[in-house]
Image (cartoon, rainbow, N blue to C red; front, top):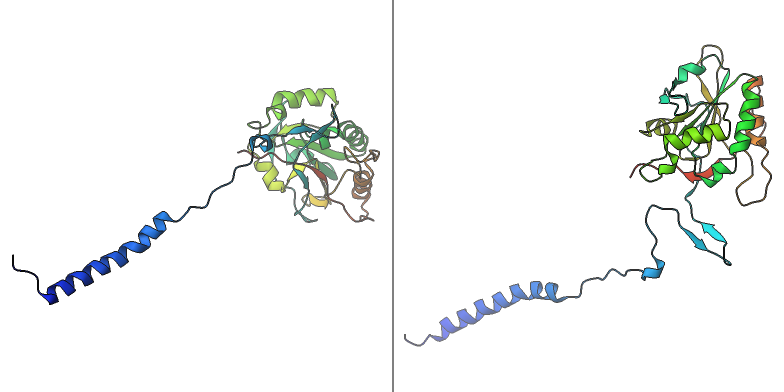
Amino acid sequence: MPPASRAERAVSMAVTGARARLLLPSLAASSSPRPRLLALPPRHRRPRGSLASSAAGGRGQLRVRMARTESTGVAVGFRAPQFELPEPLTGNLWTLDDFEGNPALLVMFICNHCPFVKHLKKDIAKLTSFYMEKGLGAVAISSNSIRTHPQDGPERMAEDAKLFNYPFPYLYDESQEVAKAFGAVCTPEFFLFKKDGRRPFELFYHGQFDDSRPSNNVPVTGRDLSRAIDCALSGQELPFVQKPSVGCSIKWHP
């Protein structure tokens, strides 16, 4: 072939340079270092979704890590949602209408395993038994997922109801829809409703049992809840500011 003319060589060099410029950005991108995800050393890892206990301050002393949660977000005047739930102990079904004849209704979200609930179980049974004789309606509901916490299943619920002699029905919310309808977020969580005649149950108190917690050495008295029940049954207004209930978070289905 005849040698390329000067003009043809210039065109060829220009095309080659253009191709090089087009390739450079992609080459740079592919050769640039990627960000690295740093993993914690194995000794710091814990199983996800479980309560982890670790030694703290000496042999035999355990520190329990739990999702501490406060009851929030439900305003006074909120109407009690309808529900229909089974009672594992008896096999009976209970609905909101079963409490229509009561002037006040206490709905408690509890479970079997929560340390905050265990701290109060005996006193919850005593307090509710006392006020149920005065006309209070009461019901407890467990909504925890048994996929992650099988100890909160129906069989264990029936055992707990017998062991602590619960005077109220202890109901199983398998779908968790009732907990969501009430806006419940923790265990224990207390919703006290009152009604006037034929009016629907309306939320009167949404707060703590008392100031006692599993590790604060404050005696369990049930003072806050009992004062609220007294006011609801007597038609008086609450004379104190409500404090939120504190406990473990409800264990939602994964």
